[in-house]
View (cartoon, one colour):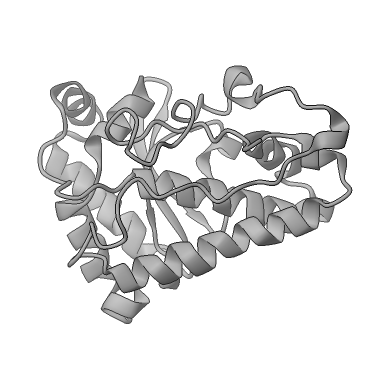
Length: 238
């Protein structure tokens, strides 16, 4: 049995179907998972992409998607299953593995791989062909209340993504009633700080280097202008 990943697809349910609801947000509901006998732990599976490999071109090429998804994302899945072999954690849903290992020095490798699986799945859903443009009215209202304008949010999101030193992520998050932009390093994610992720931008070099080399800013700006999935952010906002 495949373990459920708790995401809402960009179109409600995509043609390849991500399972569950967006985030839950690592709440008790989202963390519940499916009851499984301890002797029947199933592996973490690589979730399907919500669009075809070439659907984001020319902003992100099929070549980049092939390596990013097929090598890096898959590598985290393979590593996590290897690390979980024989452990009680192997019986938990992915989200619970993340929260159970966050901040524990002896579980760093498990956390890094589990969180990167979660982050990447969330990143794929944060993008859509023919994205960008104006957010839905309900989200736009919240953005304007927190940032003053959509353009101000875009600028802050781009700054967070381009100024993250080394590998990491830029996030639009909800902190109670207020929206914020934050950045995290490596595999870290907003939930460990009590924040609710709405969308993310991957700024690990493997996300853009084949297409943009060292021009991270060009990748970030093109992604925000042409691929960002505002509908996904609104679904996560609830």
